[in-house]
Length: 357
Ligand code: FES
Ligand SMILES: [Fe+2]
Image (cartoon, rainbow, N blue to C red; front, side):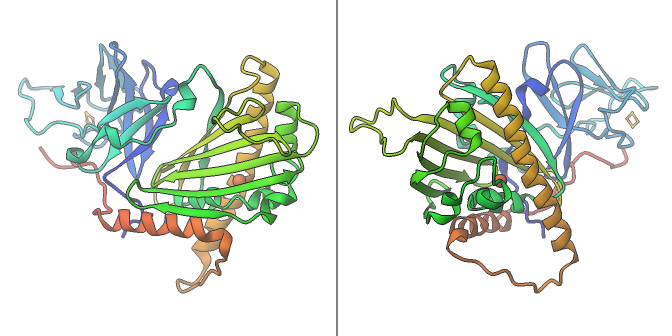
């Protein structure tokens, strides 16, 4: 059975990736074709022609007046997936339609619903408002991961790895040394993991972007909304400086780290990352520095997780891990994900592909 939860919203792309050209990305094993129609909406349909499965995104397939023309024999489809013309006959088979995906563009992301469209409730999409807020400056990207999505979930819920895997970048000894608190909100479907470090070395990532030079107070408050959205509320302030009683926090620097964890296949993942800051908003040097440094950090994780995927592929099925306190959040997330994937069919072939007409 698949470990990928279906009947869920997933981030398929940044809005900026989708324009008036055909764009393809596989989500949860389903190849999806995207384009932005002339009215500005994102169209999302199966990227497999119903005739002979040719990927519609592949040349010489093309868009003509908001319709996609298959590059193999010319079946032509509208943005709703319905076939409007076929070659050599005037009658278009009634069943000639591509699977159409519910789409919501929100917080700079393009979300798609994978599963039964009946369940696609846009109000269930978790939010990351900082990414589109004028009060924040954001750097972002996406790295392909040759590893199953669960390994990225494990990685992000246990930040003690910063001290070792990201030492000299975002990790300092105090991260791994400070215990976490974990809270599972079953009703809201959120796992929260917090680590508040009172007195820590300021890692280069934050020293160079904030200008802080001395010891810092560093808070890391994670909220993971399985399966796709992860946020890390990061607060950095001079050591001993706390928010004031009224909730204001003028002497701290806030960084919202957002990941969208989207399975591409059972063994590969789209690793969307974004870092939004509430300081140095117009400072291009800080933007360039954070964009570069964060990508370096993400790639350190990518290398590690690609290695782990190979290790897992070669190990005996009954292999047992050993877990400790730092794994509490990751284990809670695994339980939620297992429940989600058990509640769905786990199979996802595009409904319209491959049948004779
Ligand atoms: S495969 Fe698309 S028209 Fe034949
Ligand atoms: Fe990491």
